[in-house]
Image 1: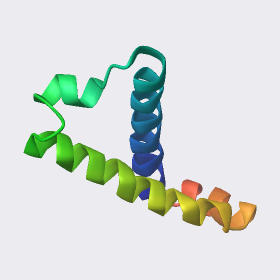
Image 2: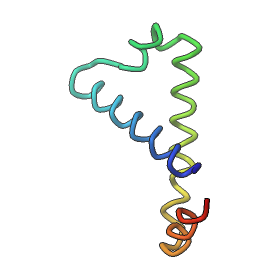
Image 3: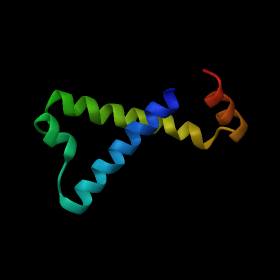
Image 4: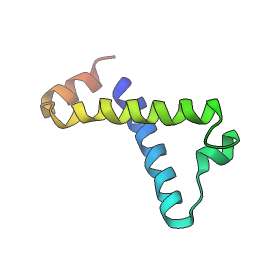
Length: 72
C-alpha cells in the first residue's frame, strides 16, 4: 500500500514539475496559496519523501514486489 501511495505522490510531483517546466505554473502553489504556505510545503515534503521511498523499488527483486502486491 505504501508503494502505491508513494507512486501516486511521485506522479503528482512529476506532473507539477512538468507544468512548471512547460507553462511556468506551479499547480501545488496555486491550489494552496503560494509556495511559502504551510500546506504547500507539506505537499512538497510528502512528494520528496515518496520519491525517496520509491528509490527502494529500484533495488527490490521483481518477485518481492509482486508478492507484496498480492498480500493484503
